[in-house]
Image (cartoon, rainbow, N blue to C red; front, side, top):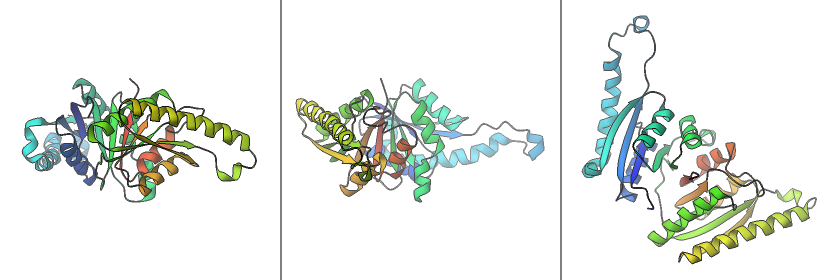
Length: 283
């Protein structure tokens, strides 16, 4: 898809990272893949803990993780390289992605409870905030699907990039694409601010019409959907009800319709989504 000719997959042996690696191998068949295992750099006093060979201690888990990755890779080893880095996980992931010219970072999403999912994970959050490349987050049990694509758009430059990627993918895989815009106004406020809601609705409709026109120009039919309420809840709820295969979002939103993908809202979209979430970054 697109220019994702080299992909970095963060691998820590968890079920979510195993699924992420498996999904990338099957869904990005023409891409080179860098599997990165990060182990912490030991900075303590060895004499105090009674460990005389900390490198041997760290090599054990590293060898196990490498073997686990190889078992998933199987016959695809010709296009996959496994690397081990030491240090802070999110820093190593970003540094290796930049140094190796990777155009996509892929991470698994762990956690079974609602609260755990909403927290998303500090490493994932830091990678999304600091990386210059696009980031794909895949839930533990999810399978990437190209046949039913959702793109959240609000007219901002970042969401325009997400729209471009969604249209591109929909065309290459003959999948359906739905453009989704959320007006963050709760029903109980309608009576007190009817005029404001109407203006926001008109602006949102214009955004969706322009998105549909862009898609049509590329030969893709884009369905549109305008929703009201909490952005994260509405986006993920719509995705769940309609069995979406992937959600595309920009990393930042436009103030006029609401900063949809900033801060905790972004974490909730990724953490609560039933499917993979593709976060596009500014050029």
